[in-house]
Amino acid sequence: MSSGRKKRRYWFLLAIPLLLIVAWRSWSPADLRSCLSDSSEPGYLSAFIRDYFERNNRIDWRDMDNRFDVLSTSQGQKIASNPQTYACEALQILQSPGFSQSEKIYTTALMFHLPIGQYMGFMDRSHQLYTEAKIDREVMILVLQPRGTAINYWWLPTWRERFNRDAAPLLDGSLIRQVLSGRYWFDFPGNGF
Picture 1: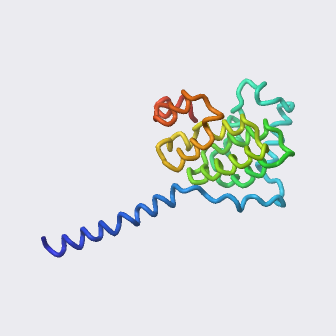
Picture 2 (picture 1 turned 180 degrees about the vertical axis):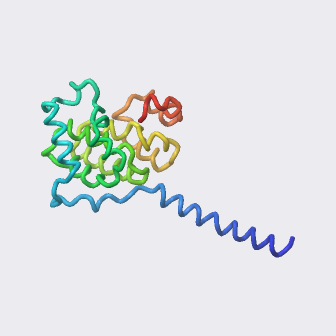
Picture 3 (picture 1 turned 60 degrees about the horizontal axis):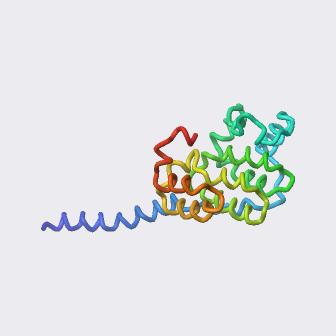
């Protein structure tokens, strides 16, 4: 074997670990703990969510025709198309007792298209808030059930780990099997956005 071929093979062998490190960093959950300062002022997302809830006469999300109607508003579309800008504020809304569970449902719906690393960080923080009873069962189910970005990562071990951590007490067993087998993904776009 020529020395040129050996060198190319060694480059390839060196490139594999580097590619794995890059992939791991790309798909590892974002650390959203820096978002948790209680002192930050409410911003655009908080004002929009509060206004949306008030305009709908403070109707509980269960009594609305479509709980995802928030996504059809122009402001909602603006937020949902660039959710990473609002991720910290969304977590502040979820942890705040000053926002209703309906407002937390609307906020969660606007975060469906976070990049997968941020979405997994969002899942981690939501898990914590659920165990602290700051969000209710329905908000946590909305975080768990794959939509938006998450529907495309049903196969990712780090996403599956988070899903498995919370799914059993919250979701029907057949739905869990459908998600983990990938069949849920094949129903897209019926189940996702």
